[in-house]
Length: 102
Image (cartoon, rainbow, N blue to C red; front, top):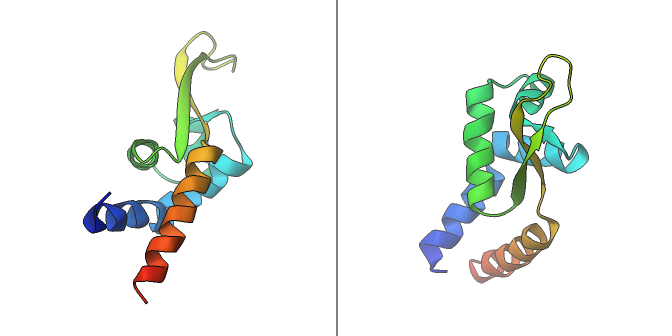
């Protein structure tokens, strides 16, 4: 990964809204974008956008599941959780990268 790409990843996970979403997903795995949106008070399309970026950098992962909620029963949705291995690896690499900037 070149220096530009490292800055892009750092920006992706340090963005205030993405950091908030990332923290929420870490504490509440297994929710879909609509639930995350409702709980955080962020528009659903914005949550979906930020989840997509976090998933692009592999710090979160998703899988399709059939919803059991009464209002959405039987519908398929992407359920999000933290990709702990990738997140820890990324944070370790970013820490080393930031140390080189001093």
